[in-house]
Amino acid sequence: MKRISFLVVLLIFVANFYAQNSLSSILSEIEKNNTTLVASRQRVDAQKLGNKTGLTPQNPEVEFNYLWGNPSAIGNRTDFSIRQSFDFPSAYSYKSKIATLKNEQADLEYKKQRSEILLQARLVCIELTYRNAVKLQLAKRLDNAKRVANAYNSKFNAGETSILEFNKAQLTLLNVSNMAESNSLERNALMAELATLNGGKAIPFADSTYVEPTISADFDQWYALAERANPILQWIKQEVAISQKQKQLSVALSLPKLNAGYMSEKVVGEQFQGVSVGMSIPLWENKNTIKQSKANALAMQSAEADTKLQFYNRMKSLHAKAVGMQRNVVDYRKKMLAFNNADLLQKALNKGEISLTEYIFELSLQYESIDNLFEMELNQQKTSAELNQYL
Image (cartoon, rainbow, N blue to C red; front, side, top):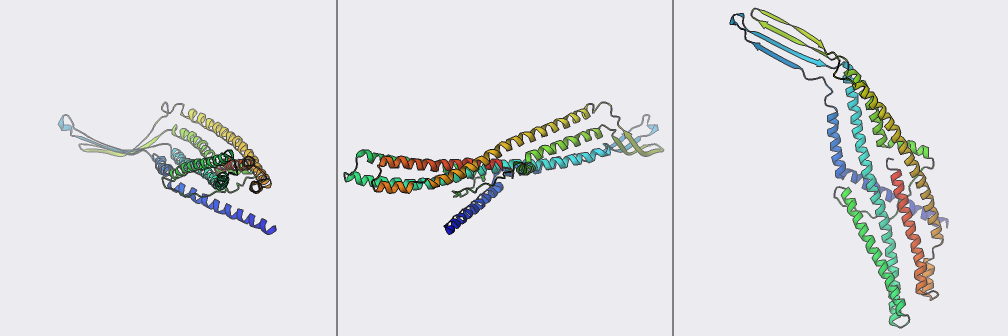
């Protein structure tokens, strides 16, 4: 018995190992080929270049004037000047820091979209695993239904059973065949959806068992990891930092702007040349800009607190649900295996101890239990996938 138990555990471990590797390779393939993610990566690259634009001083201004004198005896006049304007020096530092934060935000936006696409792919794979498991189960049921139908066909031809029993066996076979066909159609649709997520390239998928999800019983410890890995929370954290830098930038931009340059003036027999400096006086142009920046910074802090609260409550609810579902699946699976009567029913039918009606009814209870377990595992896997979307 110890050897058998060890082999069962080993087989489960090997199945989980290959299932995990299969799913990981599929998700890696989809991340590489998904057209939405390809476009998103290109958009992020363009956005980063845009964020790094406009960080330098304005273009220098060059001016040349040639003036004809009247009367001509006074000669002509030639003016030349070159001038460069500057914001207050600290403004360039803030602009650079804001650009860096926005570039990090762009990466976070890609990570957010990536996690959404991969969650969608994971859910499709979970559904496909369910359909593959159902396919294998229905194949067994179909073989059994065919065997029973053939047996009652022979009995009917030999006059050993009634037309009612014959029809009942045939209808059971028909129902199982229809279920298998419907499951096949659903599976084909999921395979097409998986191919679409992979940029139109088909991916083989034959997994019929799930990897048992690992869920920490300590929610706070688990949540700390989830919070750090969530790109949405990281994005809004960056937005708060940007709003703070934007407030500092608006203060710097409200300070006097400087300009400096060179200027020369030539007239007949005379030439003047030298440097020119100037300063703008901040009176009206940026009115209320600082107040608006401060208000925006406060609004972003409130938005961050709200987003964190909503995420925490949602994750707490999902975590409790996932833990409960995992416990229910383990308990249901253990009891279902203990109360399995499929082999006993087949022996009883073969020996004539029960009628076909009793056999079909009792077997339907076994089938219903298996179907319930499959659906419980499916829902558990979907909940766990959503719970661990960012981990």
